[in-house]
Image (cartoon, rainbow, N blue to C red; front, side):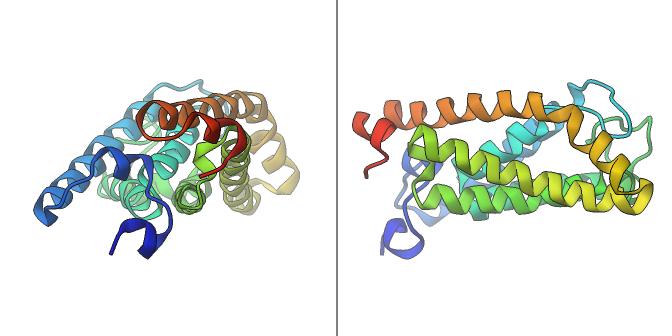
Length: 208
């Protein structure tokens, strides 16, 4: 039975990495998880040191992982990254200077880290519904993922510094940057479909 019939539409990664061998698919998936977690680490280290939550490119990478890899593989990649951090590896923004391991994960950025996992899955699920093949629906999917990350982040920050400060420091400084990232992803992913697997009309109309 095809991927499309079982789970919805194939993702961009599945379209590019089609293989009839279970072993090959497993190796491809493992490689993707490793590469994806490395991308998350790299995106965490390019930061603007805002307080109490630094600005990074992680939200862009997180949501692109879902859109390109799909809900299961995208989530597995984010969970692998979080597991590395939980084990004490300095993979998060500001580590090891701001602490490592579980102590860091329950700090100000902890809610956002949980939101990463949820947002990746949701964005991947929307990609299975072909929202990643049209600029408008891809933008909506990115907005949905971003709102999820904000929601988890602010709920946790509220428990530490109160709601007003959580919104002031946990959302407002990032909105403009995130809108730029949303626009970039909304153009990038449908364009990749156009090059590697989508029909030109899909990019404008969203037809399959």
